Length: 164
Image (cartoon, rainbow, N blue to C red):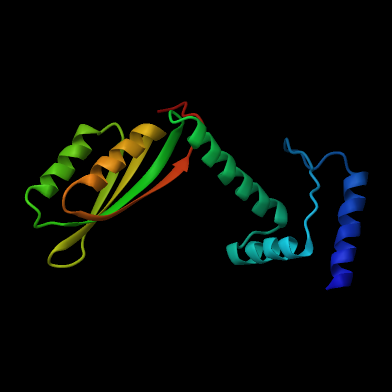
């Protein structure tokens, strides 16, 4: 393993010094130094997630981190989100209230899927699209409804929306 890592290091250094251009795409070659433990963890992550190379793995991690920072710094940033919640469908008028909330926010609600879990419980998954703050406020209001037992929002940052 040591010889492989040493050979890989040499090849990457030689490539870095010999090549000024990475590809036809607008990309820059960056070199980072990692201790052995962190490099091994990156390699394991790469295998587990199915990345073809370290660069793809690192680009995805960086995109995710930058997207999260953008959302934290600018609550008007566009996002898509999946809101999932379990609720008691016997709760008085809850189904109607939830449907009413979605209709009242039709600009955010893209799609809804409803599934019966048991005699008493249902799960709904709502696809949302809009400004981060509006999506978060809508999700919080839904999850705060009496009878909604469990809820979770998975928010995915987007680039500025130029089409819709």
